[in-house]
Image (cartoon, rainbow, N blue to C red; front, side):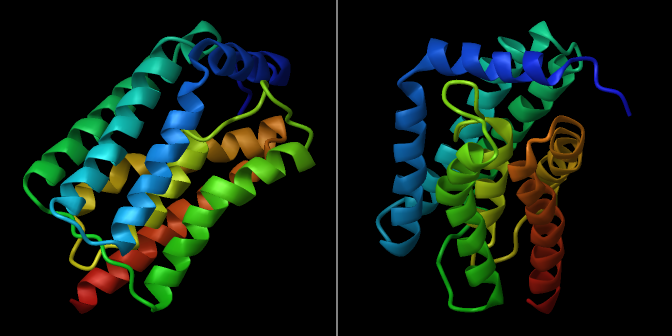
Length: 210
């Protein structure tokens, strides 16, 4: 399917976003690291804090990236922005209701989650440069694809059943993001489709066992 924009336009949106919101990327990355720390260091209300951080990420992307920047080259981003905002609200809801509980376990789910988290925070930015996507024209953490991978990683670190409705929008975005990898040569986004499909399957299998 042909995209309504070129690779140069796509990367220019990243450049506009990165230069406009800097140093927000650093703050978002620190929040991600804090959420990882809270998984391993159990403190009061850590589940609500982690879920709140995820909610902030999705709301931020929906508003600050999709609605403000990406709509300049793709009107479908109004829909994408709405979906990300809805996902952020869903995370606020499940956080308020204490429906997510985070605790790392040394099993296939926890290890896979670790791979996704490390990919989103460390490997993804390295691949940016390997594939020639240099600052500021690169997808930084806090943008849709690496953040979605990170989200699946954290969800695999949960230790009780995950409400399946919070997986729908991340999976949809994982499928949409495949177009960036294939049509635009953003090959680091191949990890997104892998994280989306495998993450949903693993969570479904794990929770059926529970």
